Image (cartoon, rainbow, N blue to C red; front, side, top):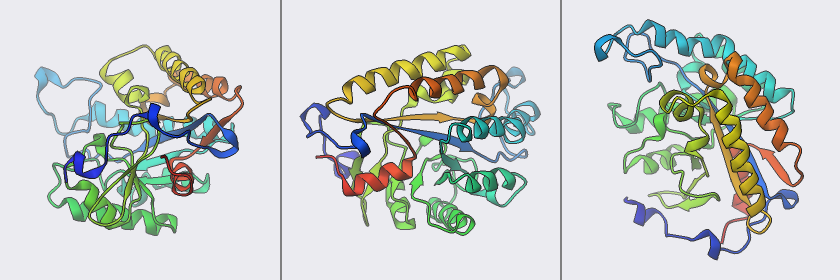
Length: 291
């Protein structure tokens, strides 16, 4: 199906005011991306460019950059959120639950975080041999590991094919973060049951900001608080959803974690803000749809 077959155009200014729990103006949720990178394959992304632009296998410095996130950076993020009594939604490659990184998955499970599918391993859906099997395998592993069916999906790199939504719905996923086109949830049609496009902000993600666009660490705090202030203002008449997506090997480093903590402390000073997870937003939306 093409986009025009999935959903209709809707201007947010012409919708009836949406309702959030407790009359909140903004729903704020965090995505923590937890991945396993194979050292015998090209790495998902580079911070240190390979010599002469060639693809190197193994790519030791960049693989180790990611490994740092699992060994050190993740635990800073977990402490920053837990100490503020906040939960996150984890976009997790299912292989983490089976391999050396399982203690990270266990810590998130014990903290009550939501688990979202992020593929079986780090690979864009366009490149896997059997996309349907890849999606189903991810769903089944997460369901077995957590004891409940995962609701959400964030594709590696947010990329999908035109058929991906149908495979995701068939497997049992209920919402996706791969369609960052609105500030309220959008219901999309599939060949089986509807799937919701969860609001997701590309420009608050630490990967494009810090690695691709190479901003200074303080810019993340400035952009998050500016985004929050405007959504809070507009949310007085039409509530909004705000997402932040972070990676342990990027936001979990010593020179950025303070900005991460400061952003939450800033937002927590305001009333009428719902700090939640993507899963809880989906559940709320089912009983309180956007019209």
